[in-house]
Image (cartoon, rainbow, N blue to C red):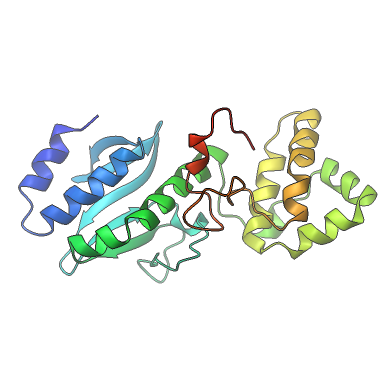
Length: 215
């Protein structure tokens, strides 16, 4: 649902109104909740801020609140400042540029949604201990341990966070077992596994077209 405050914001903008309107359509197509905060359009999943649309002097931008957690295989994200931890920008200077990158933009947005749903956070590897269930499985399956250690640090962190978030031992074990085949193939938890994504290796949500598809 559109927020009337965003209508007014875009219509009254001195710069980039057409570009922001195009970005807005893309975000709404991804079923994000539109709100207006801090005098700017902000898009949410539940109660969590995911992305904002910004109008600056030389460009308009999508601001990903947790952009540092995205894989950014296409190198489209920019760190706003030297000391910025999580936030990342994706800058645009024309409607045509946005149109050409629309599939990529949507893929990044859908990945940001998946990251939020998984509850991933920026943590150093040493801050995420291996759950005991994972250690036990590694002891029995050294090939799995070697495959896990070959994953990129970001993919390792994502798996460790996902496994550790299980409240019960049975849940943690189940999560590990369900993802063993992906780890052995070098696939990360936010990577595409259905083969439909337009931006490999990241998942762009294309699997939703498959009824009852589950990881």
